[in-house]
Image (cartoon, rainbow, N blue to C red):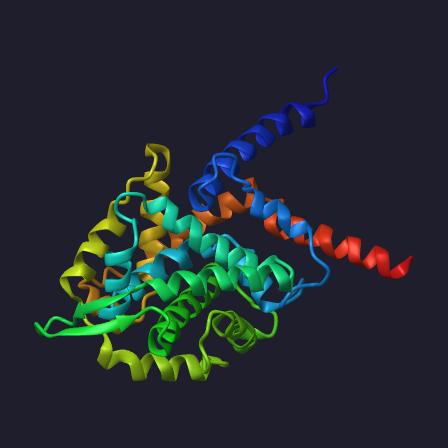
Length: 310
């Protein structure tokens, strides 16, 4: 008589593989879902800037980052200079997944890679930033210069990411080792690697920064184009319904002042959060092995531990 558990688990494994490859293919830009730079995280001679048990591993290793990533893009669009740089120098409208893949690579390598790998990735990002410069209109008809590598824009992009991943995790994933302060403080290293000098180091610092920068934010025409794009990105048909749920979940976590600037209605949080939570729970069940990058990083750490003990 066949083993019923194997009859059930085989289709589930196949479904998990398909879902995992499809989802990771979208965010990584690699058809297999596991690009070479992920596999390369097994290499290196140190734990990295963070490590297992860190707040950063906990937050970035959870699928709530799907919500946090969308939220970060919404929030970043509110800074006229930052979104002008994306609009003028990025191919996101023609090839949106390429920009997403680049951001995913930076986030993942910095989180799970060795220090040398993270340093190389930061150098790649700094090199890109040096080329991004131009002028922007904050909505008042005055053209002002910007550079992607100036402190104010480095801080804004970092804070928008940090605030968004933190908010998404707290709503859709739960506790963080060491709490919010640990995550904000640890992830400040990422900002320093790409050139920022004074990133927020606590939840209070982050909240204070967000309050202080509020006067610089505005919904420009570029913001509105970006918002429309984020509402209807050119995703595969099979991914569109899930994306709509994640987008609604992201909007439900926005700071009220950011939601108001974006012109998004306050439709309440209970329904979108329930739907998003259910989707993430399903995805966690299907993808229970966790991100391949974390697995590759653990193999690196096991190798180093074995070399130390031998």
